[in-house]
Length: 282
Image 1: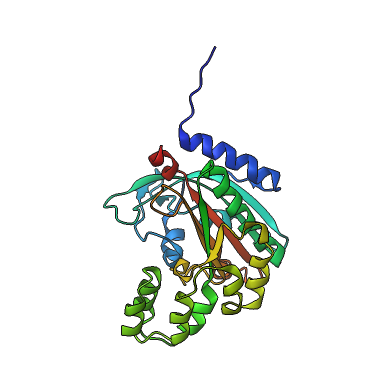
Image 2: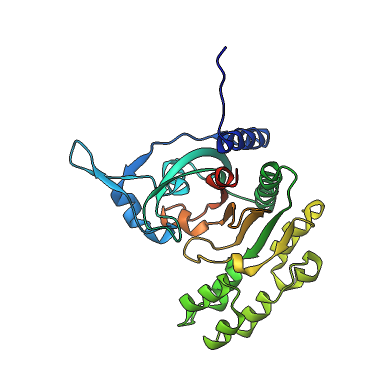
């Protein structure tokens, strides 16, 4: 009898697949590489600017996939209706604080089209359920913020890049040194309580988060989740599981990417789960 022993990240991927399919998401399979020019034109939307390339037999420069979302959005033909996908793929990039390219396993979901608040709420719920599935009884938390608020406050600020670094590091002193708007400092001081934080964010975001009342113990407002205004424009979030030092899940709204691909009337939101963190934890 064949004895199949699955690695921890493979077991995690199977559990997530089941979860996403139960919510009506379709599996999306893609090639491991795309034309280099496609990624070169979209570097502002990449986590890592380094791209691993090779020359095809026809002389065309190709790239091993550094990002799943870009590949999915590129191949969507009709974005007027709401389309929901999930994936279980590998990407090839240089992770933060790493000096070389690595193959990174990740699973996730993407929801694109004429999205409503309910679609956005569903993604946040799936993010929470993904964390719960992988936590296996451990504590977990989903940090949520709105990148659009920060983008508006920094629209004309010449210290935008430095201020964003301070936000990510929760460096209140640094914010003052770079003359960040006082409103940003106030947002950074939010204690995370949902009820006490609702007045600090826009009403539409507040309504969505408040609708997840069953998860209030595992979801909180934290504006340090805002770290990439080139990619995200609305709700952003990241997830943590007890015992794993870095975020294991991250995502948000990326309407700007849709617009850059000629789909200006469409919205998009999704997240990725970094399965390698599960393997490292085991």
